[in-house]
Length: 538
Image (cartoon, rainbow, N blue to C red; front, top):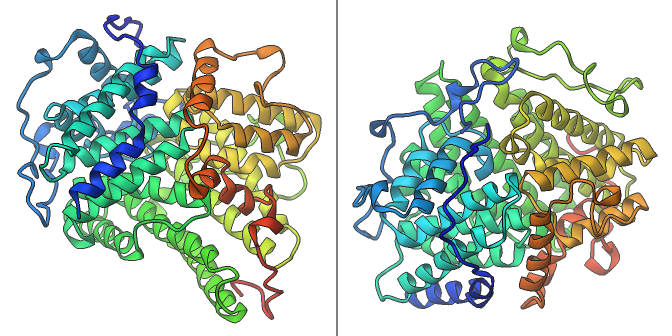
């Protein structure tokens, strides 16, 4: 769904200001202070809007009361959209009508966190308002080949207002936390991992000053906020190869909440997806923690913990509710409708694509497969074993599902929901010309959908394919929008030089490349743990 309206041109270039307001100052300020789907109906997916955020205001719960009161635990709008500028109103409307939970990295949003709670909170906070506007303006610019200043000015304003709020002497509050997460969402889309990490550190300080694991997870809004934070926490951990910030008890607390909700409302599909999603994040935390132990604990302890994680992965799949795997809602035109290079005739398992109100199952399985792929491959590397055959099969399933999602719902939000898994799986596909060109075209499609791949990723893919894709994915600059060229140049300028070793590893995506076998494993210190006496998971 395209909004054909044009935004009022009230933003001026903010490139210089954006660079000057580094996220580093936000982290310093915090430390000093602290001593859904859009409802668009898809072919074969007629009821997908049942998991959308089309809710009435009364259905959106306020956040739980913080441990330290900030006076804004409930959202009480103090101004109306009519008080905003024409540009601000335009982009808030664009966010509501053209952006989904997938833009925010959430598989579902059944209670209106993105389109109701976040917007109401933005009407209470100048900094958050500008951050939300910047994110919407960015996606509008990508879809309509706009200009860099369309989103840099509100982004720069958000940074300035956030710094002012944190330096005011008042304790940071929930709107400061939401502002940092919204800024992180834009920085992820831009491939600006260094500044995203800075905001994550600051967000963690605020989150843990306001809540503990049990107080935040008392209702849906609190859990959705935590889910949003956890996503960035895990992404930066996996990409940099560094520990995550939150301990396992936070993950367990949100899983307990959604598990209880699924028991109290056994016929509500949204709760079933939320419970499996929360369980998957517990697994992701376990995988990240496991690989942090490699070379730091005795081999017998590592193998024992790896076996527990392997069993956890198998248990997650075994415990999928039958309601989200209803065979009567399987789309029967797959795998026949896939590109020829993705059709398997070697006995490998093909995907099952679900339609109607089970469309989120497809996204959920992509995320599960990507975690399974990373675990199996990295574990084999640590143990000095060759890449297991199932890794290639998992990668093929991820790419098959990516194309199915592209065919059934080609809106940018749908593809952004699975872009990370796609980027992780492409290196494991066959290296024949047809498959390489398929991968190049899909990476270009992802960038045109609003996710800009960092230079480090393009470098590694150039090496893996034997084709130079540093400049652009496709020959003759096909599909290389001017706005994408501007963004790439700006981010290269903004992130050089990096500040420290941790930032450098993040910028170079060292952790994820090591996990996928694309990095310098010897210099990274990845040990050979030896081969276990019995297979993992046996």
